[in-house]
Length: 120
Image 1 (tube, rainbow, N blue to C red):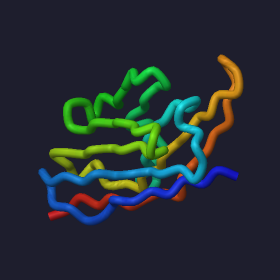
Image 2 (cartoon, rainbow, N blue to C red):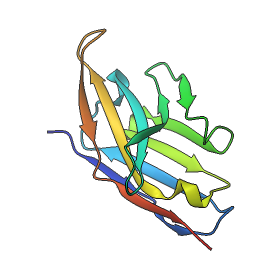
Image 3 (cartoon, rainbow, N blue to C red):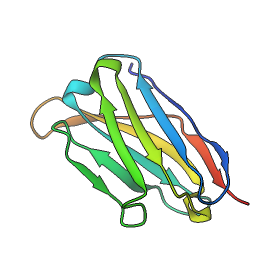
């Protein structure tokens, strides 16, 4: 069973930065699309950013220009650099790995989540 371990969350003031990391226990990233989701209290989990196997990235409109997703397949790690943080970015952030078995079928893996709190 693949395990994902997130780190890097914490408490930060508005305008500050954090870098989240998510490391996998097995070497699966080369065949996986990767993403970061977040869930604030009372809200549904939403996609923040994702990166395809080929390196194409997509971002939620609310984080464009502030967040950057990147991947290091050799380290089986995906990162989320978060700059210019706002109070509305406060949430539990989860990494997601879609490991493709075929061109259209995949297995989903989720990390346990890391809390990000933006407050003055």
